[in-house]
Image (cartoon, rainbow, N blue to C red; front, side):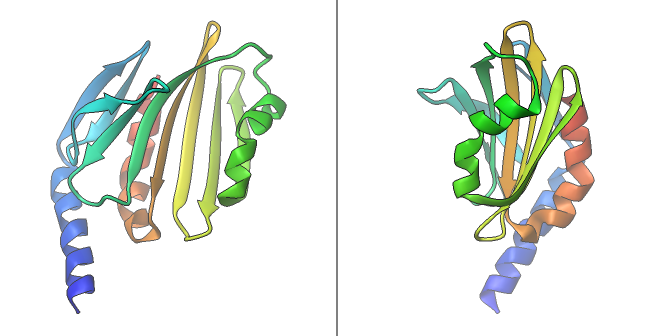
Length: 151
């Protein structure tokens, strides 16, 4: 019973904070995030910005910059994200326009993966999020705005 209550409490907190949005400028991109993503992100040794959040330690959101030295097509994307296949099932690679792509998948625990990449000059900027299926309803409502703001 405590787990259900805790889960419901986390979701309710996320719902209450999703009305407040913050804009972040990172590298040469910007992104709008719901208020439950907190503070300014920390940067790791791979120059990836990792965001914290107030609702679950099982939600991972990051923004990274890569050098694109090949033509921007699904084949190099699949090669670059080849390691993802070890962790995620049902991966799809969609080249949406000549300058951006979307990758989706589900890991072996059922967590949902969403990556949006944008090519600007010789760089590719990636926004990625992984979240448990218990938060699917929340991200069904917010991921569209997050993704469309990432440019």
